[in-house]
Length: 268
Image (cartoon, rainbow, N blue to C red; front, side):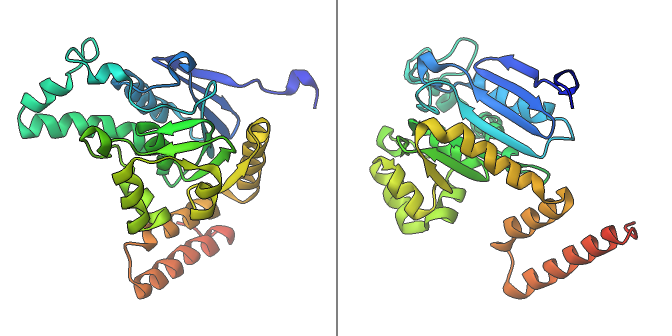
């Protein structure tokens, strides 16, 4: 294949601190506001939602990364001012609204954190530097986490009188268990690379200079298996905690039946 035959990555989105590029079966979502350590805002969350909606059907792996020294330092501090963000409800406005309005606003924000676990993709967070609060929860939204050795996770919401509400509590408990998750959230302490790897927050820890290469290697390994087999396996594993042992056995049989029929050309 000549250089002219190779496809260049295509940029599908570049707005509000979020870039989406697609290179064949791999999409990369980049938090692109390094001057603010990729601090998050409602506009960024809407851009992340849009990135998920724009993914071509050919994409199998989505890499989430942060530009600069930090993955994401959490919620932009402007959110904690009386004015909040221009055109957005401030925390005070949200508190004054009805229960239904408050719930709907938070639910909209959460959508930026939900699509990463879709069964048709495998998402990898490439995490370096700070991943605090909303940044920690965004890393937790992904299926896998490859971390640089300078990573610092922290869940600071409780320290601010709030709770982690951007979908991070469920995966955190699944990874580290209830007692450790409570301790991490209630104290707001930093979890560094060695502990993150030991307790299961990080699938892999590498020197910072090797982070991109390690993510590329992992993406290539994920792409080596047939797509439908990965989709079925991910669905089985994601649903396992909500099923009994016998229900999981049944789900495994049904999934394997679909795979066998597909391989034999007998799929409906």
